[in-house]
Image (cartoon, rainbow, N blue to C red; front, side, top):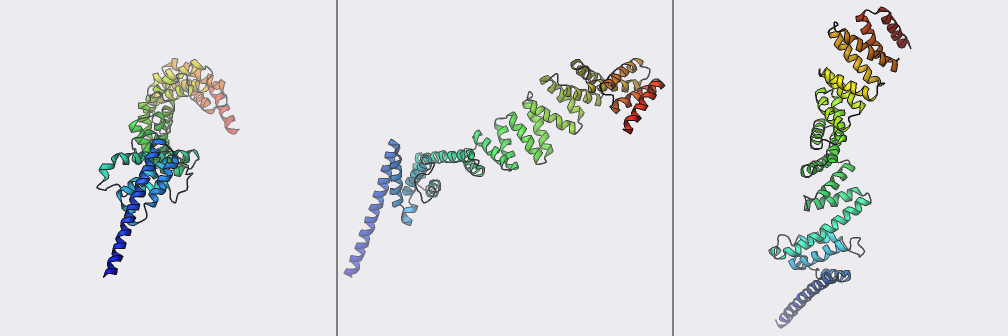
Length: 368
């Protein structure tokens, strides 16, 4: 019986000694961390790491709130200040921090350690940002995306972060995810470049409805942006949507009033929806800039020809049509569409000699 008591006493004594030793290690680790906080000496921080690691041996140690809080303070600081991992670690300091924080969050002691927890999170954010930026610089886009996404989960309203994530998803071909982030960016702080990239991404994914919606919205928010306007116009042309082309060419011409291609498009669109007087105005504007422009002369001659054919009593229209079509033919004698229009004109005016010449020329070109 005495022997059992002696053994029990020895075990109790050893347990108390071990507990005291662990408490001393924890205290010393915190003292070293405090010294680092004042001096910024990373050697003190590394010493704190060694001490807290020694106090983290048993299962009881590894689940203790205080041990894990100190360990998180130390390792999160190392993750920040030793960003290039010059010290040797068994595991990544970030991973060590996250592991220990599992025993901090949800603990009954958590509310009393909010200052320390905020510090730990701030250190982790610095570490994530450094790694993300470094990976981005080195074109390690997947790693950069991983760290930026973690940061975004912490700071969801950080616009530069969202921009980088959108760009990285785009670079990696994750178009649907990239679209989500560009949509968020436009909702928070719209930019013309975001609308343009979004439109291109929707086009790549075959979503024409959202592509057009994005271009319409972008052109409304940024009416002076040429890229958005001209991309919208190109798509409207592809769909022969002349009513909308009329509206947006007017806006585009305010930005580039001497653009001959734009003037021609506006004239053709107006003519297509029945606004012949407007079409005439735009075609004449082309010839004011360049009297020898083929398309301008031909379009104006054809416009007058069509009006003449609607009412052949309007002989004045016949003469001006002949003038502009003949001028277009002088500029490009081998253009069949001009010769065909002149052939129609001479057929209605009864000028058989000119009609024969034109038809011979047409046949000659077709044979060649």
